[in-house]
Image (cartoon, rainbow, N blue to C red):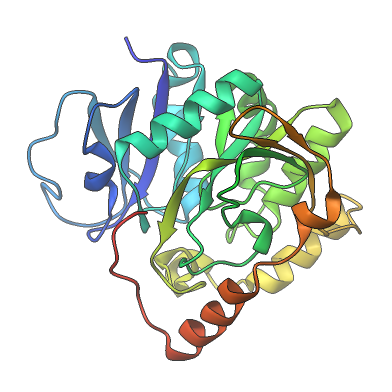
Length: 271
């Protein structure tokens, strides 16, 4: 039996079928929010499907509540967005390294060609992984005990803006480790803020900006900076030069601004 699970909140254009290419160490559950009867045809072995309406994290909470066995069956559960291009080998690598580092929460790095919000999430190809103080909502992978700890936060707002900062605050308080895996990367193909997560039906008149500010105020969070704390190279040597670890990837930033201005969608495969 596989000990890892990915759960994707999937629309009709979900890229998750590509995640199943190659041998995999994880099962996949599709939490579908569309209207088609059989949206993805016959499901392969180790792939299941349910239907949950609403925003991503509220829908995921409902999914876990109706599939309570997931929290008992798997040691790590990830919740990637459905617009990430990757293959099974990438997810296998991320899951293995997060297990080896005993990270409470982690994610694979983003390909530098991705649409992205935070430079810290972009891949540093000269490293195997980084210990960090922030993991983004886009593709978080939880150790199940930490997942149980933060699960009540998923209902704090509709947009989910700020939840990752709350998770960081909980991890920092309890001394839990956060990791970004650089040994692999996923490609985020959709412009930021263009997903169905922020549709009028999901937001019901709420503003994600207001929700973010309210959440930060409610939890007394004033520091929203994001830093790498330590890196580990492919040969196991540690990288502790904080300037090198945290300097921005200039060309990635320029590409991001250009693509955001065009509102384009990437179609390249994973790298």
